Image 1 (cartoon, helix red, strand yellow):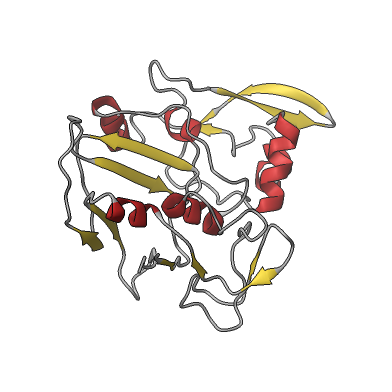
Image 2 (cartoon, one colour):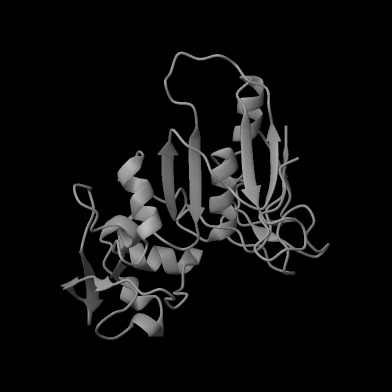
Length: 245
């Protein structure tokens, strides 16, 4: 069983691009090379994890997908449908904490993103954006040539840390009560190498040191003798993803 070490600067599972048939990566990597013959023609499955983006933010206007090009804002308690703005290269880092996510979700109405931050509180409500091929041509090229999952959602209504735990372990704790629901506090590093006073809030309301020990996808692949590899910045580099040991 692998210790989960997740560091600040991770790429969040708000948008997950699933590719089959090819592979790519960069920077520091960890891998295992045990292989088991299979009957499927698929040779590689590649997950590209992006920070603070939804599927519709990237691919809402992609031809033929289950996407959207409009949104709903709540103004003085009344819902109003608006067209999504063209996405920009460097958007504001709109609020996406546990509390903001639940405000925006609004019990399933999905109509209150404009109420989560002052940067999106007035027209044209710039937190409502949709990408285009001209803005992200490389991602659109991948979508055109591989499998694009148009029904992908964040695993948890909350920020980076718990969603990244879901990325590697299909959960943010060993069980629901002991699952992380927020980002750690008390330091700039997240995970098992965090500062000694660092804590993270759990679903049961308690706070613990942000280091977990439960089964990951890597453990399952290891048991099945399926080769795997992940790429991320190394220790000390900007955007470090941490290590799975």
